[in-house]
Image (cartoon, rainbow, N blue to C red):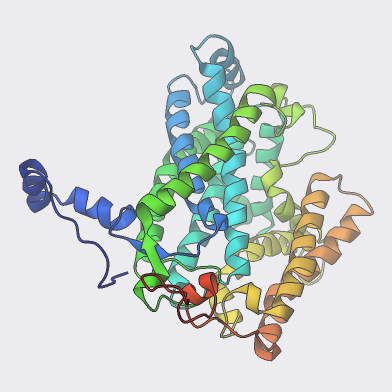
Length: 428
């Protein structure tokens, strides 16, 4: 994003001038997150969650590297190695609890980030590429988290790996060979553990690379904003530093208070108790579930119970992946001219009283046993989920009458008084 009023980087010393001429890293940082990057002045705390997601990604990489130094991807010793980290490695318990709870907080802030994008239509032109890269990041996060869930080699790790990889067996012709290739055998064992450990270590760095592309794409059109209108004048923006570095810092401090509380006082609350029992291929848990952040998609997977042309299992697998892949098409499914949900009364009703309750129901059903009435409720919620994105959203965007938009971001913040502008005196 280029604005004529953006501050330009000026090296202050001979050393920084020499560096700027040969490796303009300070200039890059200044233009990316410093005073040289103007952003809309009306960003709310809902725009903090991108920075929070970046923080938790860095936290996961750092703690993961430390944990990898003491872990062994061997089915005979993996569970014991995790206990060794907890009991014998200096600060090992802190690294493991920070890593485990960091994954949950990472998903929490990313889910909020995504649903903020839904409400404010952050996927609309000219920001389609930002959204598409964000969906890719989410898919990579899911793959990384699933593989990490297997590594402690507890009961839920083993049986979760067996059930989830077993889903690929439902694919006609290539399903069973693909499942064997993923596991390195016919059941989760040393080969599967080595594969998952290697990929779990690698994928966070791939995520970091896509995040860089995501931020790069963001800087081309600039940030969206709650009003959904584009920047028109200098008074619509403020420098990212110090205004939003301070705001993001405050938001990060608040979230870290909750994170520290979870790590130090409730470290195992978000984990499954069966995963503190060593993996036993001969003892099936009464209720096999993934980590909590997969519950909505697990509910969609289990909502298909009847064979129709294809097997119910294959329908479930297709629907589970389609529930995320449909997000790729949102820039073209939502054809409304207005971005912000604040000015879309019909869209707003379907969002707050349709999509959000639907996701809550899927979350509850995903963690519940695969029995009635949860299966039937999952089926209804799954049907509504796809109807919302494929039918309701396109129709609403075509027929609704948006409320009047403010002329500019400044007007959205200060009102329509022509004197209520930066740099002009108030009316007498």
